[in-house]
Image (tube, rainbow, N blue to C red):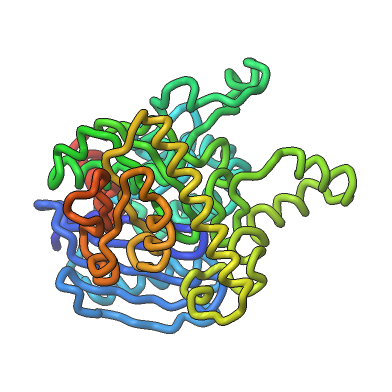
Length: 392
């Protein structure tokens, strides 16, 4: 038997998982359960990309717990020799207490459950994954890796709201999210483009959840997301930036209660709410309904607006990196974001963009535009391996 780390990364509508050999931290397999809550499918591939398992889960993919059980079954069938010694979990919210990975025990888990109202689309699913992994691998070490940790050293002005100071002290502040993705992109730039890593980089993590981050010298200085994962860009079903007066109007005039407002802002807004068609960018791009184009136009407009804001926060811009499911795969979104941004020094190479090259800007552009697939699983696996060594 060889010892392994299993990584579990639950998004709002997907579950990514991967198996890493602890000796050398080589990735043996990656998997995805997609469209959880709908027509869920599972695919598991080895390190060469060869498909090991491909399943239509149907009802088994109705929720994240069933998706995790299907993922564990697929890994066990394909790798009977794999002893899982540690499981690394993506946990969206670490609050003010966690700025680095931590071993999970009952007390830590209880504290993380208290943060569920801050990230209701993710935290419960993340912790359900912890419960499932503890049951499936009772002898394994469980490690939490936090999406908020990368942003915990924001400058004060990018960490605070204009509320009475007492609320900041109570933890009402800008946490930022997608930190594992941003940490990976920063490490990739350090490895492959050290000059850009040393400079000012705006990273757009675009998927069913979407945000942007300003990174200077490898450190986060500003994020479009704030106290919860609602703020900033419109997303698959989340509204993004919203005048708080709208919430007061919904309460006082429309007569909605907190539960109804929460459901609207988290589950019925964003691309789904604007289009009335789907939260899935692939479906919107394929649609001939003009509402789909309008939803896409709002999405790309908000990205451009936030990009200008991040450039101001960083006092300049050397590179833009697109990542995440939409950022990596939609040449249309990249084109519609970049085409009007020539004033900022962005000049897209249409051929390179259509081919999904790593660098999609023209050679002499003032701002380098890149497409870098994120790999949150590797960040989690590193932390899990460190925990086994006693470093976590």
